[in-house]
Length: 105
Image (cartoon, rainbow, N blue to C red; front, side, top):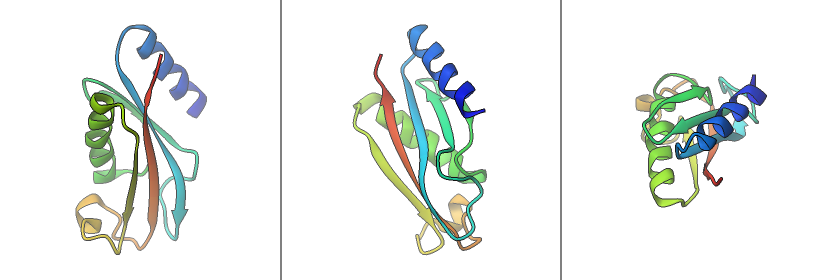
């Protein structure tokens, strides 16, 4: 499935759409998706794939739009110790790190 997502990101880019790729790079404890999971996001906020679930995905999409406009990658971290844990849906005790970068064509 992740190969299909990366192919779709390339297709969007070739069609002239600005694209970001979010990748789970680290997990600890209870995490919904494994390291290497992807979410691809275009400049209009359309997305495919999953890096977590629930509200985390919405936060990642929002941050990805910033990455697309600035072309500056970001490392995002979500976890129960984070003050936003309940808001972004990781109240289960896990922690994830997600790297978001703009796809340069």
